[in-house]
Image (cartoon, rainbow, N blue to C red; front, top):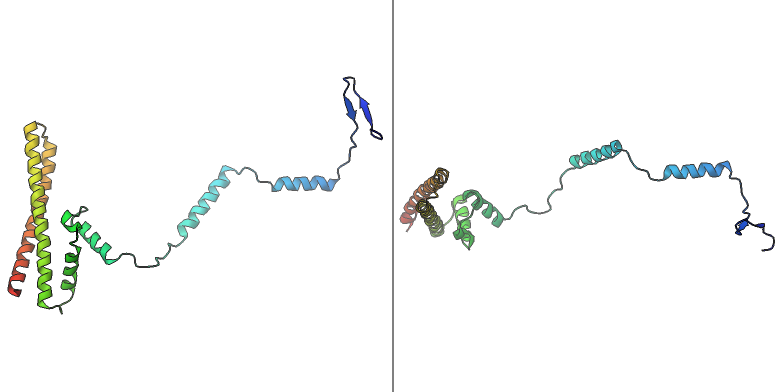
Length: 193
């Protein structure tokens, strides 16, 4: 260790003299500037203001325009059935009877159809109405069986009875409307034959 200032402490440890350099004023300013540029914790107010600005920007942004057709014909037909049957499409409409439903739309919109195609359309619609009528009749019978079984068990309450009677009344009303439509179609199909 030639040329270095080395001393031995009273503990027996070596102590090396390290030269000290004075810092210039410009170095101190640079270190403070660096500290100012470092990210720090933000206040709650600044965070809330930033979130509010982002929400306002997102709210004002226009919705993207659709690139293609929104709904195809099959989806339109499905939505029409959902509205017609109040959210539950009967089984008879789910399996392949949508073609019969499609035939009734062109018939009602154009008068230039031949009588044979209109009678086919009317008979297809008539079959759909008969299927729905029998389905409603089965549902009414099912409700009546439910009421009788609950009476036998002794668990029929006034609330249950009122609910079931309301459901049956709604289904009977729909059956009457279907019956009128079926009679109208019968009169249309018979003269065309």
